[in-house]
Image 1 (cartoon, rainbow, N blue to C red):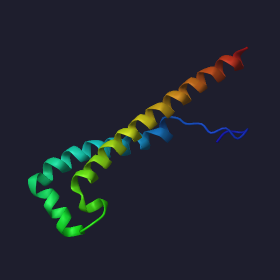
Image 2 (cartoon, rainbow, N blue to C red):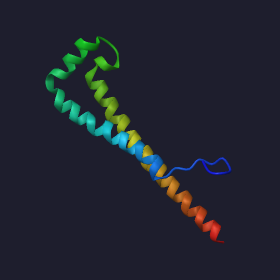
Image 3 (cartoon, rainbow, N blue to C red):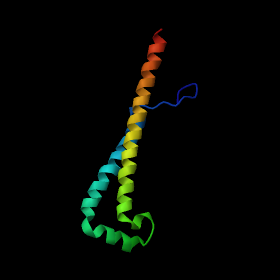
Image 4 (cartoon, one colour):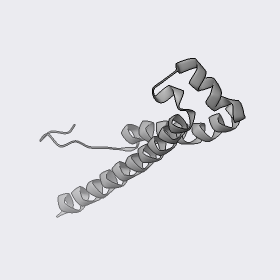
Length: 93
């Protein structure tokens, strides 16, 4: 936070969001490949019910959640860069 109560984002604060998103999105493709055909049966037998028991739903949640986190991180970074440029333009005058 900067004085005046405004929240700022920069590469340091948005990078973890993008990294988490990439980890979740790309990890979902790896997990689908790694678990193979027996993954869905294994998770259903192990967990019985809930999100963890539905293998396809778990993979889709990770994939779409990761994609949303990547998009959110990039949007926040772009907003912060535009705000920083507009502040520097107004401060020079």
